[in-house]
Image (tube, rainbow, N blue to C red; front, top):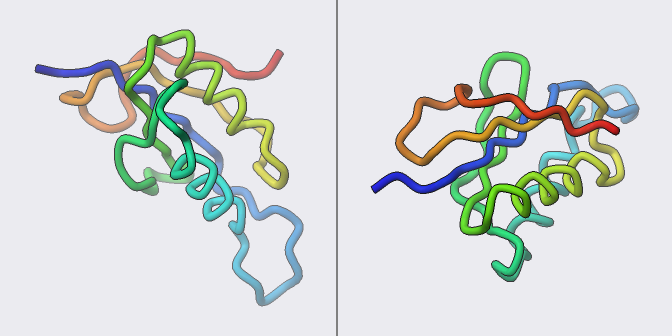
Length: 105
């Protein structure tokens, strides 16, 4: 049976790192943040994955409002580029689909 899943979509925008260095250090920061969750407000569903010009993180295991709040926390992490949004979907759906939720404001 499919479970509620929220995808956090982050534009693959370099974050002001010096030339020659890995341009997306925020990916590791977000993965670490999600990996350390205790489950009370959701947990990481799977490893992040690139889809087009975005990097997606997947969270589940909590009510939709909590998962959207968690996505807002990810969007506010230091170094994460602007333009982050979430999609509400389920664990059986194709990646990148679902209902879009803007996270700014």
